[in-house]
Length: 113
Length: 113
Image 1 (cartoon, rainbow over the protein chains, first blue to last red):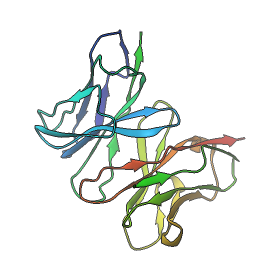
Image 2: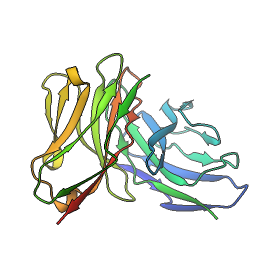
Image 3: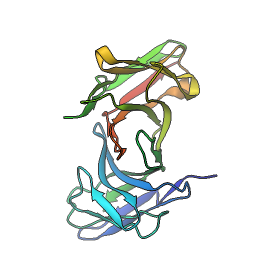
Image 4: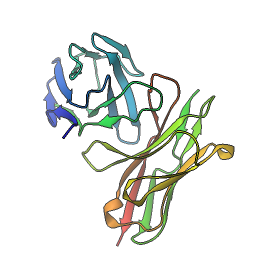
């Protein structure tokens, strides 16, 4: 079955450490997205990409970085510059075009040790 | 500014009772509108979407939503709630070709036996 796989499900970060969250999709979607979810805050867009080797900042990109070397993969790195990284991170993908619904992975919960 | 508002943070209904979750949007043009559901620790699942045409949209799991342009609303309804419907529900909208979604902050639904 096609879908989006996020790994790991739980991740712990030490102070000053960078960590990378994986997102892989086999839906053949061109667009991919990263969201951060905090209780009572809804979903906030971190980065998105519509084509390989290109990506754009979302609303809260500071302290995060991404790459899009393959259509299927869109990893997110939470850098040490992100001072409050504890959150639930969701990856999504969609076809290009107006009004296309996004499909979501099951998320990664990141906590600080 | 574009926005999606869900006025109710938490709603409790009895099993078998009807349900209506409110969503209001603010866009310069009529947006594409979506309702998603999220179980604890999981990703988001698409319930239904509105693009144009019929203002009453049917979705999965017995849900429906009605688009009302005059009220800038897209409320989600279900005639009879089941205990398994307990989850968090998100309304989202998008305009233009990029497809970026703006999410409301969510409504948590609890179901009483």
